[in-house]
Image 1 (tube, rainbow, N blue to C red):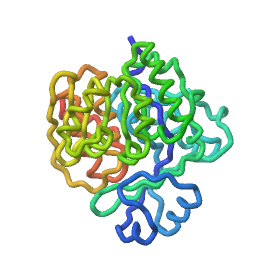
Image 2 (image 1 turned 135 degrees about the vertical axis):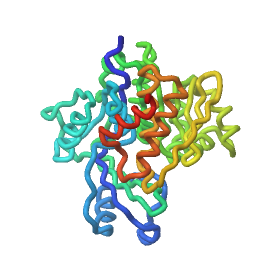
Image 3 (image 1 turned 90 degrees about the horizontal axis):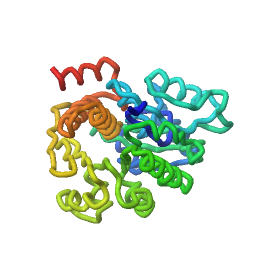
Image 4 (image 1 turned 180 degrees about the horizontal axis):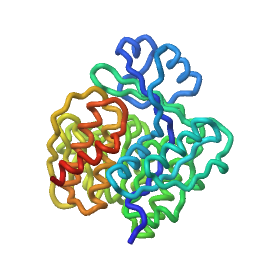
Amino acid sequence: MKKYDVTGIGNALVDMEFQVTDQFFADNGVEKGLMTLVDEDRQNSLMAVINTKEAKKQAGGSAANSIVAVSQFGGKSFYNFRVANDELGHFYLQDLVDSGVAIALKKEALEDGVTGKCLVMVTEDSERTMNSFLGITQNFSTKDIHDSAIKDSKYLFIEGYLVTSPNGKEAMVHAKKVAEEAGTKVALTFSDPAMVKYFKENFDDVIGASVDLLFSNEEEAMLYTGTDNVMDAREEMKKVAKHFVITQGKNGAMIFDGDTFIDIEPYQTTAIDSNGAGDMFAGAFLFGITNGHSYASSGKLASMASSRIVSQFGPRLQWHEAKEILARLNP
C-alpha cells in the first residue's frame, strides 16, 4: 500500500487575481490568454495600473492547484516546491497545510529570497491571462524533491511549467526516473500552449519513451504533435502517452484509456473565470483513478468539478463543494 495517492512537483506561486478589460491588455502590452514570465518590477507596475483591491491570496501554481484538489476530494497528496523565507513564503506553507496537503519543507529551513507571485487577470469573456514572477521557485531543482514521497505514491504529477529552466527540466527528469524505478506511475501536464510552443524539445526529453498519463488541452495537443486538428493529434498522442486526457473547454473532454476513447460531456454552467479549470480537471481526475473510479467516472467527476470552477472566481473549490460534487457522482 502506498502512503500517498499523488505526489506533485511544480512552481510555488502565490496567486493574486484581478478583473481587467481587453483595453487594459492593449494599453499595457500584455498578451492575452497566455502565461508570460515577467520580472518583479513589471509585475508590480501592472498591479499599480490595475489600481484595485487585491483578491484573496492563495497558494497556487498549476500542480499545486491540482494537488489541493486531490486533497479536497478526500485523497492523500504530497507536494514538492520551493518558497522563500518571507511573508508570502510563510503564507504558502500554512495554506498548503490547511488544505490537507503533506509537505516536508519547514519554516525554519526556508532560504532568503522572494517567493514567486502570479498575477492572474480575468476578462469579461472569462479568459485568464497570467503574468508570473517566479522568484525563488525559478531555482527549483532536484534538491527540492523528496524521493521518498514519490516512491510512496501511486502517481507522480509533473507540472509542465518547469521546462522553462535547465534545473527545472533536470528535476522533472529526475523525478520521473525515481517514479519509474519505484513502480509509481507518471502523469504530466503541458500546463500552457506557450510551454509547448517554445519548449517542445524539453518536453521530449522529459517524456522520453512515454508517460503513463498526459493532460493537454486541444491547442497544446495540436502544437505538440504538429497537427492541425484534434482527431489527428489524439492519434499521435498515443505514441507518447499510455493514457491521456484532452480537455475541450465548453465541449467537455476526451480520454484515451489505453484501449478506447471516452467522450466526457460538459456540464452546463455560466463561465466567468477559466483560471484553474485545467488544474481542477487534472486534480479531480487523478483523485478518481487513484481511488477506485474508472476512467469514465473520473472524467465525469473532473468535468463536474471544472464546470464549478469556471462559474466562480479563483482556482479552488470550497470543501463543502467538493463533497457535494462527490455526492452527485455517487448518489
